[in-house]
Image 1 (cartoon, helix red, strand yellow):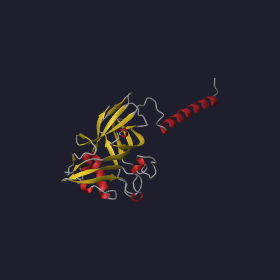
Image 2 (cartoon, one colour):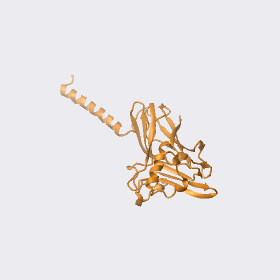
Image 3 (cartoon, rainbow, N blue to C red):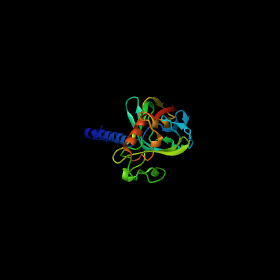
Image 4 (cartoon, rainbow, N blue to C red):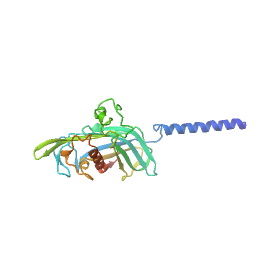
Length: 252
């Protein structure tokens, strides 16, 4: 029969090992059991049409007839909202180029437990913790640099194209980012679609409607959307319009 002191020592060692393993799991979300992959597929549309690059065919609320020549942006800070109220954070940053389908399908490093979830949220752009000059050393991400005299860091978005104003072609450039000490990133909440994760994992389609950047609550004339990087009011209005730019598409 074990002595009392030896028995207590064994119990303490066992408890210590359990606590240590629990702490290790909480600090490193990669150490999981029976968790499954989650993938985000970003889709780009103008109204009901799939985006076709470099074609002047779209009309916004103001009446501008326009094309899209470039659409590049960052998304980060994804949160998966469980039906029981818990939040699972995916601490990753993704670069998307609408003209490169390989960048539009984003597989998270962290897997998530099976169960029912009430929606997702994410940051359009980069928060101040992530948005630090020199963070990205290689292209294409480092080509999104924001000028140091304007605050440094990186563009949240480069949305560029052409406008046809009665046969006269002009350019527009909707470039957004942190202006000096004022961030303009957008927190997107998509909580209207529940989904279940099982053994095959899940793919969530996220749809951007480009026309919604130009309306609600602010209606933009694209002739005024150029050289706006140092225009604080327009930067703020553009992000306010982003509240309904994204919706959930298919969930598979």
